[in-house]
Image: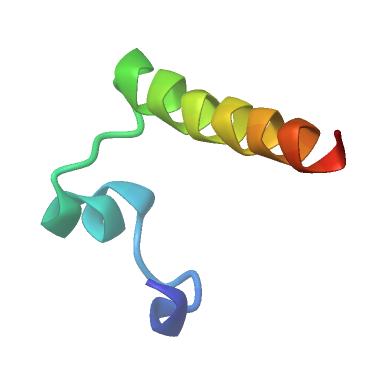
Length: 46
């Protein structure tokens, strides 16, 4: 994806991974990953 350097549309870049940026679930999944990372960081700080 990085090698494409902005030469392809996001739909074209995400398709091989079965991802669709127009699907709200795509964003919910991404936010869940970030939420889990924050929770892990908070655990490490304690």
